Amino acid sequence: MCSNYRPVTRQDRLLTFFGVERNRDEEPTEVFPMGLASFIRLAQEGSGNKLIAVDGLSGLIPQFKQRELAYGRKTYNTRSETVHQLPSFRDAWKRGQRCIVPAEAIYEPRYFGTARSPGNPSAGASGETVTCRW
Image (cartoon, rainbow, N blue to C red):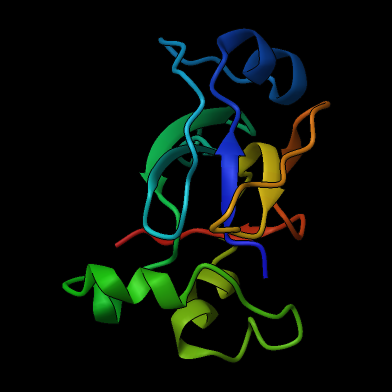
């Protein structure tokens, strides 16, 4: 299962491919479960369907485990068949808390090198990502 990725950080690419702006460009870094990176979500309710880029952790930490950050290493991936049933994802899924993970490359960790492919950014390994608000 793919757990590492290189995020889209350049302002021009975020605007061109996802229609969002950030105040800064950052050097691309590798993101792994529980790593800090930006993601795209709907702005607060009442703002229409406007998308915004915000920083967050790669990995879902449900409210019942919010004091255990290491739990996010277990919840960065789920099966679409069971996401609505599992306690870690169920509530966020029902509330429609989804986001886009803008990625230049998504890959399996390889400890003797990395496999990265150039090209246009992609959005999430499976197309839909669940987010959690406490």
